[in-house]
Length: 168
Image (cartoon, rainbow, N blue to C red):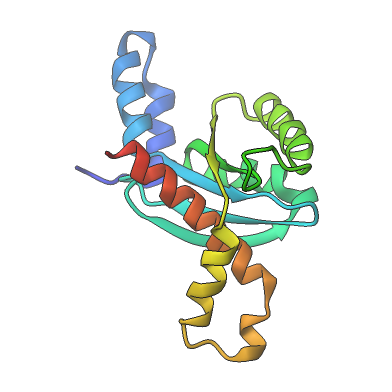
């Protein structure tokens, strides 16, 4: 598989006419990536897949108020096909109060970036697993307290969970 630079890819897509729609769809899927989101009231963790959609990488923790603009920018640079957002369920399978804010965010995301598909994944235990990963990573105690690290690792776990389900 030939990996093309995103700008070259965009130029190719612009030159294709409707007769070549199948080629355009194939190119789009080959070079696209997925994003994972650990949505929070104040800050949200973000992760990204490789273009083969096999591996998830922690990317960044950003203020949630800037999340939509951040996704639009990263979509421009990385051609995002799917955004996977954690679904906050309680242990008894009830939906967490945060779900209202997430649903509102998804509504705006679908309006602002209609070409991106949104998927949901159960995010129970991602913060706990992230904390354990950080604890075993060898980071200093001061760095382990940095909540932004937990958020982006949780986002990576959310995306990884989706990739594993998709690739079964």
